[in-house]
Length: 165
Image (cartoon, rainbow, N blue to C red):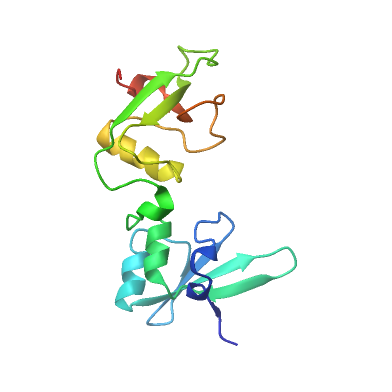
């Protein structure tokens, strides 16, 4: 029985699902699990074949990762503006302390972020990476979005990493 095609599901395949188990089969038959920085390049060059087990409630399903471009976009190896909402440029960003923040001197604070460059945040992990590289900010990528309602994005950030807007 051949594995199902992840590529056939397009964006419906959960490449970043935490319970997804990646299996890499090398040319010599050696098998490893998980993924590292070289997984994509080895699979792309034909030095290995990448598979994934998608666990379900009653059964697990084996898929071949046959759309390596989609895999790379999902894992942020290749920028994908449609998936992330973020153009690949220097973002024009301003921030303010969320008025509901009850510990403004805490290590992490809730801030309201405005993207004046026209981008939107669909993937907090990618936005955090952009802000780390561009502004030196440390944005929390776990937990909820935080904050109250209103315009902008409510995020948790390490207070000492923020520069005055």
